[in-house]
Amino acid sequence: MTTAPLIDQACPFCGLACDDLVLQGGPDLAVRAGGGACPRATRLYAQVGATLQDADARAWIAGAPVPVETAVQEAARLLGRAQAPLFGGLSTDVHGMRSLVALADRCGAVLDHMNADGKLRNLRTVQDAGWITTTLSEVRNRADVVVCFGSDVRTRFPRFFERCVWVDEPMFAPQAEEREVIFIGAPPGVELPRSPAGRMPQVIDIPAGRLPEAAAMLRGLIGGSLPAGTATDLPLEALRAVAARLHAARYGVVVWVAADMDWPHAELCVQSLTAAIGVLNQTTRAAGLPLGGSDGDFSADAVMLWQTGYPYRSSLATGTARYEPVMNATAALLARDEIDFMLWTGSFDPERRPPDPGRAALVALTCVGTPLLPDAAVQIQIATPGVDAAGYFFRADKVVALPLRPMIDRQLPSVAQLASRWLTGLGVAAC
Image (cartoon, rainbow, N blue to C red; front, side):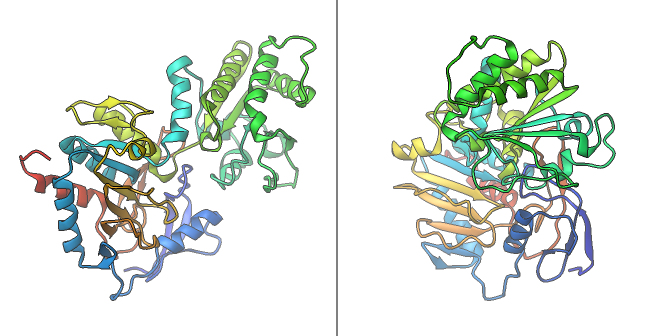
């Protein structure tokens, strides 16, 4: 085990997948001082990279510590007798997800990611109307106006402005201090980002419950279809100024985080934003940037599309993928008591834990730092890609899959190893 600094590591703890980190190896994995990591990465590297003592339990059956091999065999037994399995969480990298899909295909399981609700708010818009989106590199090198809608962005993607907006020497865009950043409906009480010179962004205060209305109004203002004399207590003139600024921009970008749009029919809000972007492209250049990719959700989605042709929330019970985004939601399946087994995978964040499994047998594959789960029939500590295991991770714009290099060796099994072993052990008998 090396104690030398680990240079230019890719971070798997949010969708930006920043690849400039400097980590300190040794018994514990930590971000080196000045190593580029955000507070989120610093916290999670410390949690999932902590030293395991020889006496530490690494697997449990019904809450009692057991050897890992015993837990693996018991999980195989429970899976082998399952009639209606669900593979939930799905927080893993490309390697892990490929093995889980193969196992699900063998067992006829439903696959649903822990971040599926946010993903589907965007997906429904694409299905209904399409959209024009951009990449992190395009924002970095071309955007002159950046509008963040309904999110402070930094809570989930702490280095977004550092890495993509206020950058040195963009190729085709104004210098950092000349770029205009506008927040519409940023959550109250959050600390908004400042430019390197200390300039604050423009903020238009709109309550979260009124954001769908604001998106529709912005669409009308950009398209010239908002009726004259529209009566509203929203800041209409401020929104009108945003519309004018986007029309005048050389390359305007509207950023949103679908995970923050936690209200009914949020896809209609996304659709208003993307329709406005479509209008802007008649006279200038504009694009959307739907940020996601955390907890491996874009990696899982990419593998699902390669292997099955459908996103998660698909069932493989009939031998072909059947996509049912409402019926196959984890919460819905549990509420209807339609599953008898749940395999939960959480590789990156100890705070993301499975829901109450009800009467289903729960096998939980959890990263270091996750507490003992009282509802789990079996719990096994697993390697985190980019910490204990190699892998690949799709970043937020889904155009780049970054390699994740292992940095410590705690002899923890990877998701791919466990899923492949269970698949082999099932043999030819029906699952």
